[in-house]
Image 1: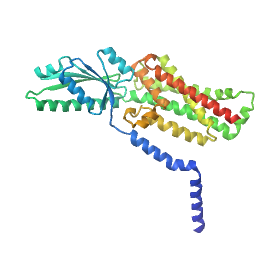
Image 2: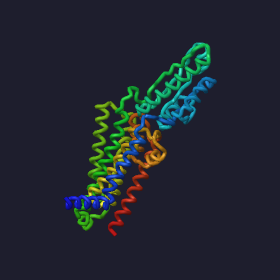
Image 3: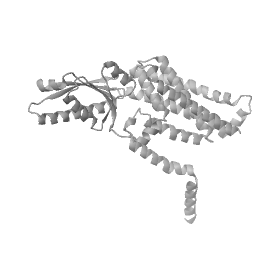
Image 4: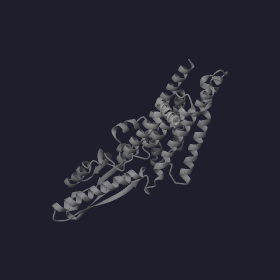
Amino acid sequence: MKRFKGFVIKEFYHIFRDYRTMFILFGMPIVQVLLFGFVLTNEIKNADIAIWDKSKDNVSKELTNKLLSSGYFRLNQFVENNTQIENAFKAGKVKEVIIFEEGFAQRMTKEGSANLQILADASDPNTASLLINYTNAIISDFIREHNAANAVPAQIIPQIKMRYNPEMKAVFMFVPGVIATILMLISSMMTSISIAREKEMGTMEILLASPLKPFQIIIGKVIPYIILSFSIAVVILIIGRFVFEVPINGSIILLLGETLLFIILALSLGILVSTISKTQQAAMMISLFTLLLPTLLLSGFMFPIENMPKPLQFISQIIPAKWFVIILKNIMIKGTSIIFVWKETLILVFTTFVFIVLSVINFKNRLE
């Protein structure tokens, strides 16, 4: 028993000496609990909306102030025509638009009812449903207060219209997110593991001693994954289109071009991971921890980023999948052109460039 006790104590010493094991045991659970605790929420705060007040009377202004003071909504802009509404939705500036009809207060006073139209961006059906529910609840509360202060009861009749996804299909939200997640994991993780395997088995030195130049070796490693990843993306798009009826309203050429750009970005990230990993296990752990959870939780396809605390919102800005999901939703569901996704495209191009430069620097340092 004394020997067994000594053996157990020795194992504890081994665990405490290995910082990687300690990180897996304590670091990852803590980070996961914090991430899930802050990210998994059904509340929406400060959602950007636009107002088209055709009436501009006291009642419409009071209701607008009540909506904005609730904490659920934040005024992004006042709009004055349908073109501005369309551009605001396509640019992703607003989640909802509220339109007051002309003579809003007058109709409430004389006819006892007034109409109000609510347009919601249903490319994210969960968020759209929550925003509609919040809006209806605030309108109902406003009517109760108004009727309590006035002898003649009145009502406001909301007319709800879901843009881009009238049937509120969840697959409209999940298909773009699944594409981004799968491409990021397959492209980056498999590339990093493949190169780390060569290093771990000692065959990388043999390859470097061959007539092939280092960049030719890297390109030769990633070309198969580019072809396979692109093929997988096309298969997912076909399944989404013909099985789940997810539309592709924009340019297919632009969609495929953006997909190829994201694959190259993910591959460059995988190469960067491989340059700092000595073993396949290390490459897999780094890929899973730095890619899987951030892509799932901080890309915005499962949980709205604007609901998260400010530090997580800041971190989400450096998650490549976030920008790719925005691009996919805009092209596939909203049918936008490059005019509305040029900023996100430039971010992906710049991020790819940074990853490639860092990979080259690390690779050269290793050779030296």
